[in-house]
Image 1 (cartoon, rainbow, N blue to C red):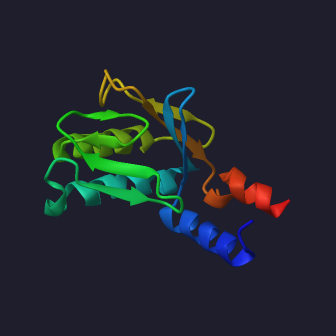
Image 2 (image 1 turned 45 degrees about the vertical axis):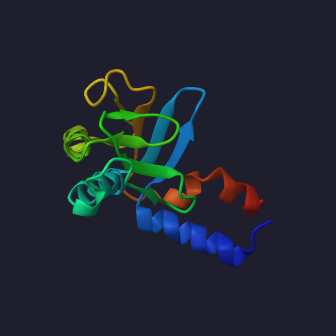
Image 3 (image 1 turned 90 degrees about the horizontal axis):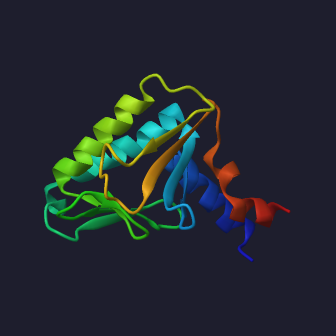
Length: 149
């Protein structure tokens, strides 16, 4: 069982990221949960990744979040699978733009599903679960909830 110091560090990492994420292999979804501004943080991660020339080569990648299993990867084809959200740098910029467009007028309580507009043949979809502005990402982490009880 992790110590309270580890739990606090994990909570801070979720807050720094701005959203909670999970991958559901049964529904084949990457699910990101956060406020509109928090989810725009994912758009910003994509923009930062895609604008970095060090990521131009195939298989370059970055891991994000406290558990480090959210991976953005440079790949010749756009897609999402149980390993990563991937594509060329232009594909990832396009995904960032799609997210930006979808979140422009998004309100708490809606769910946005992105797959066909980004990569119709993708194994997985990206699901954005929009929560209220005061949403605190660590509350969605079942591992932290289990440790609290």
